[in-house]
Length: 110
Length: 119
Image 1: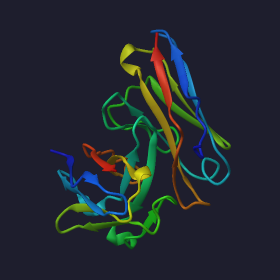
Image 2: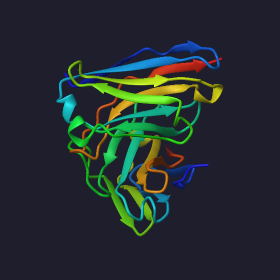
Image 3: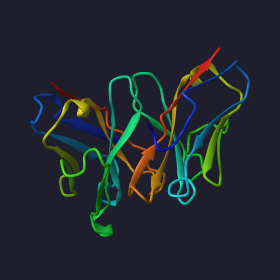
């Protein structure tokens, strides 16, 4: 069981907006930065969002991140078929003094 | 080319040891905090540990399941990161990735992954 809680699956149709939640606690999301990764099948993960809501260079502005209290969210607007992937949130946890990942959310584009 | 190239995976018996290497090129390795992340068969990502730069004291942190068994080290002169794994058990079976820590400048570089099978 992961320290950060994500829904195991999400889905949407092309063009829609979907949001993936990531719930934690005061020791991780509540007091540290949140990062989001996308992992395409058979590939290494790719950083989508850093420092809660910042997009690295090259990441489309269809992807956005937010954080409030002990929860974070990744939103994908204008959904495209190539967005089908697994998405993970991660944050540092001050109690375990280590990074903790969410269990991952598999996004299907129907 | 900016890349991390991993080596050293394979099949090992329970209780055995293995060392993974991760060679960096195309960026200033000595400035990067480095992580090891693993992914068991059909499972999600699991953070293994991190090493900071020598300038930040070279401090290491480990996930609870590997603490005391795994050791992360770096050789900045060789631009190489290492993961020494001792007393391996079947639950350590996974693809292991080395990666830069995005805390420093959103640097996002991943190795190709290397399979460690404990059986």
